[in-house]
Image 1 (cartoon, rainbow, N blue to C red):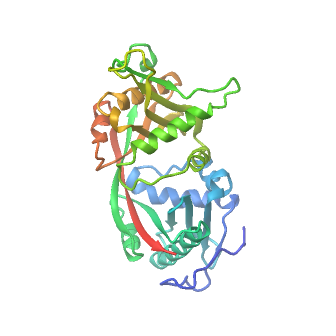
Image 2: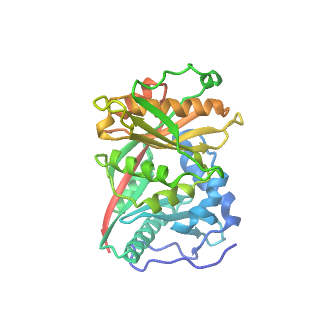
Image 3: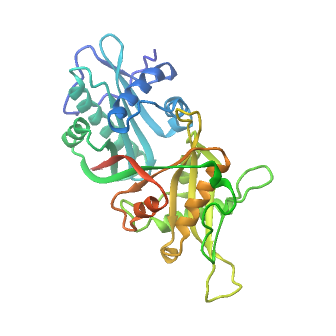
Length: 351
């Protein structure tokens, strides 16, 4: 058991129950942390399965480098809560909390944890030299206990997200099984050197296209190229050969070089009950000038075909339920269906 004391807020609205303590989690806590997270999700997703590799990365792997976290133990030493703050980017901190809801102290512990998370978020912002920051918390739609905790801590529900999935059939790997891109649209993976390392220019193009594509979307904020690449590389499912670019030709300039118009960053989903992995769309965007030309569809179908060729059984993604582009309708048209819904809750705080 790791007994390293974690920061304790001195200005929170609640105290921990008598005899309870905090510590920084370590790998020995993984089974219990997976149990807490799985219990939180199961009523809303239908599954208590947790990706063990991703969990380990959060606690003590690459993903842990940008996180501050603590566990709360009861008087007997059992972990009853796990609280995390992810320093996502300048001006944005993602907070997470899993609480054992079987204990009568659950509400009290949740209040204390959200106060602690807020204090840590302020400290991270101060370290970056910022005057304010946004705390971004998540909840499953229908999780009334979580909603109550967040509202009491001063958060507001600002958005809902559809968690969608599409089955992949082996025959979709065959040439011609899926529609080809429209005339003038081409799609290719990010170029790599002979060593498999991606070409830096292509990675920068992906970042630039996505920054442009999401500029008019909800809660858009600028993220530097180094932060963008490093954050995605921390994910256990990250693979360089899951990054794609789309280009469009200018009909008014015959022979001119096609211009970058869309980008997709994918990842690997862990194996499901049947033992097959899936693919996941982390980011998909098309520049405003290219919208309506089939760029997003071409990228999506390229990933479906790639997933089928790799023997995977599904492609998952998340989409803003109120997207200004109506993206969910595109996904539904090509076979994606909503499995469950999540929510974003925000709190803006000054340092």
